Length: 478
Image (cartoon, rainbow, N blue to C red):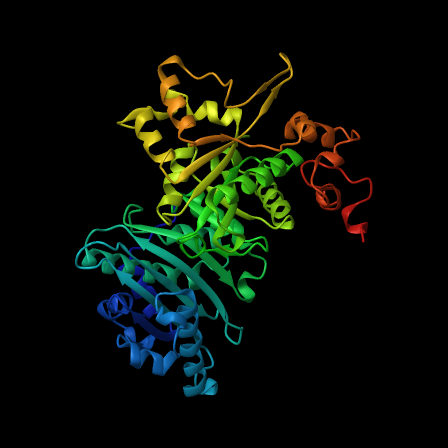
């Protein structure tokens, strides 16, 4: 965006759209009033834009229009997409294209629940638009999930109305620049009012858009604290994935993922299963990369980011990208979705950082406040040993030294099995360091391939990842 570009208010955006004779469509809003379409009615000229506005609040009536939902859940992505596609089909069915040769049709929809009367549920929902960027072009979709942070239903409704206007305006005026579109969603909306924790672009206009990069923008810009991708690279809603699940996570740079990462993960997970008496079907496992790690070299290299995520995806793992520099924030985030068991695998150096008071200066309760979150009764840290090449000493929870004023706390957590040592680790893997592998890759040294999980070295070579230089140009590799 140019520094000279003037940001329009939602009112100005709504009027601009109403005055654009090529934009024409429907509004279907469920759960928080007709807050978005109200913005268009109020500014005037709405007859140029609005074909229909509806709000099917009654479930039976809504089911009669869009069909029934599994388990009667109405605030879902599936419901939203049904609404968008049904409403577009009605436009196409009821309006003769010959009579509207210059119109780009759209349907806007939301299905949300605002904060309840007792203020025990905060409010969240799905918002989306299905639209044509050009006349006679197939439809595109932008779908996002939001969480409201205002403590008043009326304020949440107002925020939803502004968001809807920003989304519709962005779809028609910023579709060639999805990053600018994402940024524009918060215009005239404070980030402490609204969180967008998932966004998905699809359709011909967004054919070359990687939704993982779009989700990265959400974390990078502080619109949410974390986003999650499936092994196939699809965005996943954290609430859907983690709700009431046992969670096991391992943090790292994974640049690239090595056998030591997998050894830590596999053996830690095996112990977690035994300790919790749970099975694969009720465990979610996550490989976490922090934004601070992605920014380690100063700026985020998006190619490097995708390389890391792609390799982890090839190995079949979900990936979480987070703003959580400290472990207690990660654990507290998981605890917001589940009361089941939480396991975190980490190395000795990471645990020493957990017990370093300088990382908690921003907390009023200091390190004790952080410990209250990370060492909950349902949380266990699985500690992977470290081999000190200088002293030839193997560091575990048994001989790890923390600051003297924290020794008793450390003993308490260890005695109560909040910290346990990972068993059955492979001793030879302790000599593997990703920085050494990267150096070998850059200098075309031999021997780094066997330090990575099966298939990863071939992927790195084929796609020239992490600085690997192909002897043969990539476009000649079959």
